[in-house]
Amino acid sequence: MDLKVVLGAKDGKSYQKELKDAAVDALHNKRIGDTVSGEEIGFPGYEFLITGGSDKCGFPMRKGIQDARKKVMIGKSVGFSGSDRNNKKQKGLMQKITVCGERVTKIIHQVNMKVVTEGSQPLAGEATEQKQ
Image 1 (tube, one colour):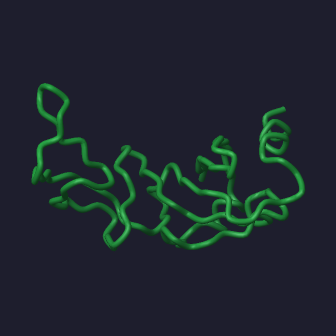
Image 2 (tube, helix red, strand yellow):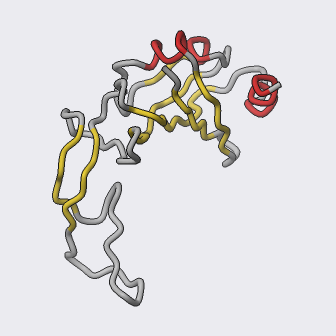
C-alpha cells in the first residue's frame, strides 16, 4: 500500500514524500492530532503532528468523525466552499458535504503533517535523496 505524505516545515515550505509498506504501517490507525516519530517514516530526529489528509476519492479527513465516510452539515470549516456568484461567502450558510473519518485507514491516500521537532538533516535533502 502506498501513501503520500505532505510535510509542512517550520519555515513555511512543504515537502511531499511517498511512503511504502513498512512506513505506512507506522501511520495506520493514527488519528488527527497524534504525533508520529520521524524514525518510523524515514526522517530520523524529527517528530510530526498529523493535521489532516484525504481519502482515495479526495474527500477530506475531519476530526471528530469516526466512520469511514459520512455526510455532515457544516458551516465555515474544513471542506467548506460555500460561495455565491460574486465569490462572497454568506453569513450563516451551511452545506452538506461528505467527509472521511479522523483515523488513517487503508482508504486514506494522503496524510498532511507538520513538523513539531526538527532533526539534524533538512527535509529538502532527505526528500531529494529518496527520489534518486
